[in-house]
Length: 237
Image (cartoon, rainbow, N blue to C red; front, top):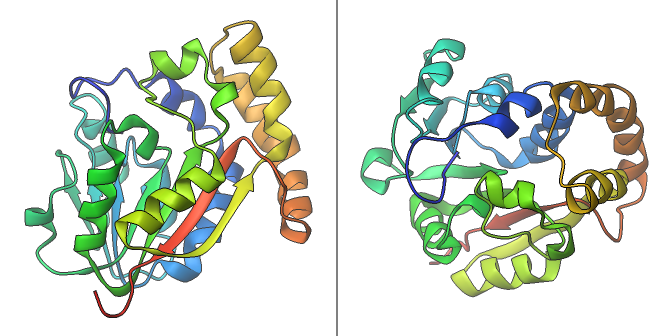
């Protein structure tokens, strides 16, 4: 996870989100058709998403995790000949050859200069390669918890579309995600300034996420707790 000030990230949100197996699987399944063979995951954290990415038929995963305390956990969890792990920020010099996709799952909001970061992703991709974004949505949901874990912002869907388009991507798909999570998030984090608990996360993941996934597969929500966006690098750029 890329953080505001340094590479020592407490990881309280990652610890709780490690129980969100169904949630992460849903995200990775949505991204699956756009991954390609060679994938970079920016802000791999403890490796829970990396593990799911490696369950897809990819040939190479470059996992970047700059946090000094998260990286050893990533090394401990990921043991696959297709994976290359880097205790560093996403660096074009480490990529060596163009990628099919660059994945940011709950990471872009931690990066102060998101414009420069996405420009770097554009440069790292092959023509027709994809940037795969999953970010927290709705600025009105920004809370003390967001600030505590290093979120610079929450995104509106149209603002994220404008951002990636301005950088040079063609938007393939953009939609809100997890409409059911808006009210619980607002009550817990905005009104009562709570924190993300493992038990509550596990309950939501087990009982709510499977139902919401079914509903959102049929009808894309007009609003949600997160935004998912798939952008394509044009063929001639």
